[in-house]
Image 1: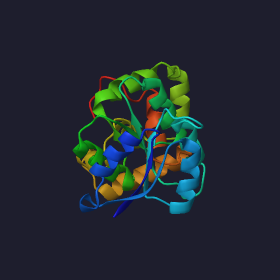
Image 2: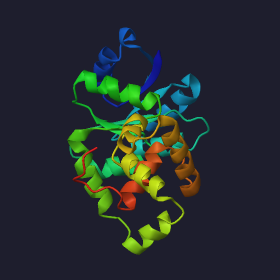
Image 3: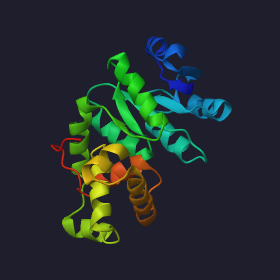
Length: 220
């Protein structure tokens, strides 16, 4: 069972998520909260496998709550729930350490897949808004000289792996694209994380966006 902490200030939204994330689908609702501050306490008490985090809430918003949760040891992965048009907020959530984002009005099957993906360490980017979020990242991309400096310690293959991570590819998809084993991909990713001092896959995606390795029009 994947234990989920629901964080949203709207009871109707939480009720809908409860109906989707049912035990027969392999989920258990560990706790529910209506704001980010309460989420910090609930996460410490219940130690969920995944946090579903709204971004716009009273007391403490989802971006700040995500930042504080991810700063803690053994922090659970966080999937941000959002409405269409929150591009800048989503950028902030990813920078804060979220493992991805999902529109609230997506089909239940998509929400189930998203939660399962982040629970096993993958990143989930809702395709309905990904291109616009990438565009938001590109606004602050550094000039080429800074990109070259940031990437100088990576091998050509590591740069390609990082580019594919930035496009949202899973380890299996990277392995297929580069015609190598998943074990080799994991070795490259570990090296990338170490050289760039990145804490997780979401941080690698943010880095790839910030440093121009991913263009908004590129497919996953």
